[in-house]
Image 1 (cartoon, rainbow, N blue to C red):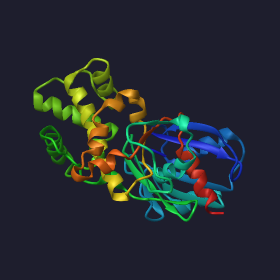
Image 2 (image 1 turned 60 degrees about the horizontal axis):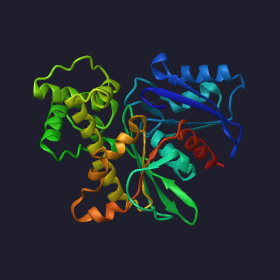
Image 3 (image 1 turned 120 degrees about the vertical axis):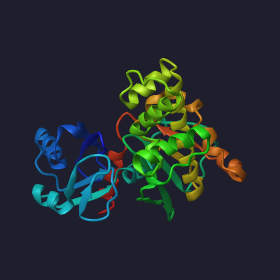
Image 4 (image 1 turned 180 degrees about the vertical axis):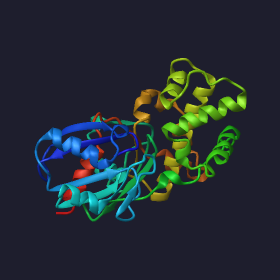
Amino acid sequence: MGGTNARFAWQAGPGEPITDVRVLPCAEHARLQDAIRVYLDDLGRGTPYAVAIAIANPITGDHIRMTNHHWSFSQSAVKAEFGFHTLRLLNDFTALALALPDLPAAELRQVGGGQAQPRAAIGLVGAGTGLGVSGLLPVGRTGWVPLEGEGGHVTLPATTARERLVMDGLIHRYGHASAERVTSGQGLLDTYLLLCEADGVDIGSVVGAADVSDAALKNGQPQALEALNIFCAMLGSVAGNLALTLGARGGVYVGGGIVPRLGTWFDGSPFRERFETKGRFKSYLAELPVWVITSARSPALMGAARALDALG
């Protein structure tokens, strides 16, 4: 469950294939429960015994209020309304992290670095409606523990004059300039608008993040291209910070909806340079591989299934 779309799938039991994937726009449903009802009614298989919901939000208690969407609900009330025997809530990027060990090589594209160290910590970042951050820590010989945090809301790591200009504008607008305020769809748009305002340039027909990307990559519009480069640079800084914090010798994965759509342009963007620009630890980071997740189907669905498996 992201801020834009809710993705559903069915699994008959532990280890069984994930089938019947369907994407429902969040905006078309007043409540999470309404979207669940539409999926289950259309599927026609009755009430599932166990359900996992991976949602773009911290899970800190029974009541959930989404950060980037208006849905809010009580876990216990949802469980009672549908009659689920088991309901497991987890952060969406925690679910994506659980899926990482099972991702096939064909669904990954490496962007710099060398070989991953086996059984070493793994980092995960991803930009979409918001900025997701997670990772995996090895436990024992084969196990992994996923991280459940809100790293997308750390303070923005601005380093250039233009990035600080954007940061000041975001602070004026929102009160705090988090990493998500740039490395997200709304962040890409806000960055473009702030650059245009600073340069005295008309914003043209740009009204969304996709318009910024199109203006940059198809038309070469200067402020749009700069905004996209700042987006990639900031994402690189955040990913590098995460790699250092975790000691992510197992590499860093980049998910989310935005970067995969940039294709191979992203590989030559400022991302990798900023990922490695950490002073005395540049050589340390230069060895770490980064992979863009290119899966056509959301791997977080697999991770949500893994979370149910772990409950036995």
